[in-house]
Amino acid sequence: MSRALAVLVAVVLTSLPTTPAHAFGQAFFPTQHAGNRGVDVLAAQHLLQHHGRQVAVDGVFGTATDTAVRDFQRSEGLTADGVVGPDTWARLVVTLREGSSGPAVRSLQAQLNAKRRTSAAVTGAFDAATRAAVVAFQQHAGITADGIAGPTTWRNLLWHYDYPDFAAGLCDQDPDGNGTADWGTGAAIGQLEAAARAFAGAGRGRVPLGDAGFEHGGDIPGHASHEDGLDVDLWPIRTDDGQCTAGRITWQSTTYDRDATRRLVQAIRAAAPGHVKLVFFNDPVLISEGLTSQYPNHDNHLHVRYCEYAHPDDLYDC
Image 1 (tube, rainbow, N blue to C red):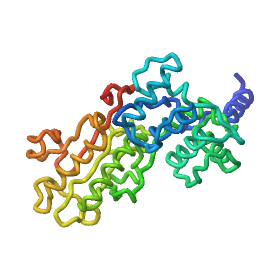
Image 2: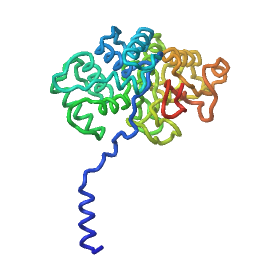
Image 3: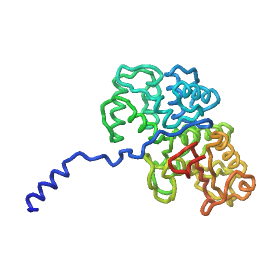
């Protein structure tokens, strides 16, 4: 090949459109079922309403939601197991565009607010602002940016991680210099927020959140896991309530509050029944009580691993 031709080929190749580095080739519909909480459960409830099921939209996958899911599955010829997996999501989601209205639009708007940290009103009306938010998300995800929320947009949006509301009883700690590495799946964040609200509501102070994960998962410095949106690090609670201001301690520290940390672990498990796979923390008393498990280098933080009924990585299967 001549030098001139080689230069021409290089120019053509570099001018071709490329897939953005953040395109979600790994996106999948997240499986949700009884015991889950969060914005993805909220989405399913709104969509069930769209399909005529009477169910409260509270973001909690309880008995009534389970019943509504099973009824919907039967009507669609699906296995009526109460599990909102890929096949059920594919029947629940509907294509929405400017001019659409109703519960499905509220589902979409709530997802955009949670997953892209916007603050649009959840009105149920697909207006110009909603279309602009959809286009922005599609551009962010590296998919066709046409402003129409079809199956591909829904799959990418439901898969995309959520960011915690720190007003829900949490405080942000960044011990490993990873910045806002606080993202997790819709379920993980919803369940964490519920536990933090319960803990703070009992007058035990806020819950210090260390690293969870990056916005789209993947490798995170200082961690062997935290790549799938279901691992969360929390700091133990202090007797002086300084866990958000005075630094991290170990279970051996004089300011370690075992009782409060015990109550935190109990709140974590109660907020996500059947969806806490493990809690690593080396306090021997909490280990003896079956609340935590021993693991090297977990003297100064709790590692909570949430799980799903079915996940592509079996480390996160419940």
